[in-house]
Amino acid sequence: MELFCHEHVKLGSSSQVKSRPVRAFRDMALIQDKRVCQNLLSSERPNIIKPGTEQTDVQAYMRRILTGWMLQVCEDQKCEEEVFPLAVHYLDRYMSQNALRKCHLQLLGTVCMFLASKLRESVPLSAAKLCVYTDHAVTVPEILVRSCDTVHQGSVGGAAGVAAPLESGLSAAL
Image 1 (spheres, one colour):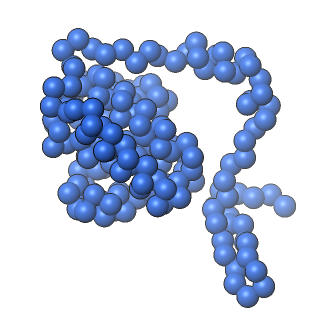
Image 2: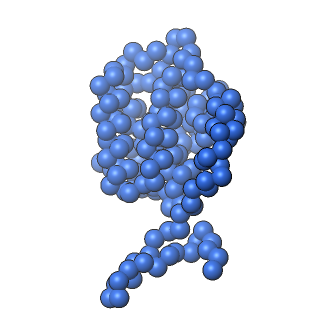
Image 3: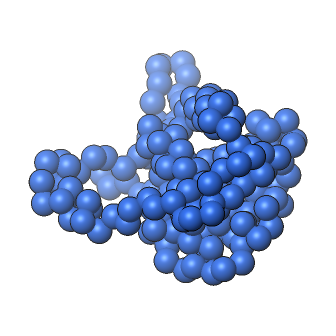
């Protein structure tokens, strides 16, 4: 039987049938081949901090609180295990390239989770659901606009597999 991305696998007992989205399996040929890892490492861009973009408004404890909240959201939503580390990578990559005001920290964390779930989840987190987790401090249009700006700006583009840098974007808006 062939499964497509839109199909659901039926699980459950005799009285109750549950379904879940079909997840991609781990390809052991890729995971166990050392050449794959070497090629990925050689093509990875270093995360270099631009001069003059040191964070003056955001402190280390604020990042710790934000990442704790991001982990809690990922656990509550039962995200794939790769979503949280990827979102934190996006967060760090953006903060290493752009100065950020602390009033926009939760927006950035939300956008990073939104983008990471879009890349890793078969059923990604919705902007409306993330808006609820922020207690409506961040709106759905803000998440959508900032996620597009962040990808187009190229701050997380190398990690997301997107190469379309523009000088305007999230840093100009923040």
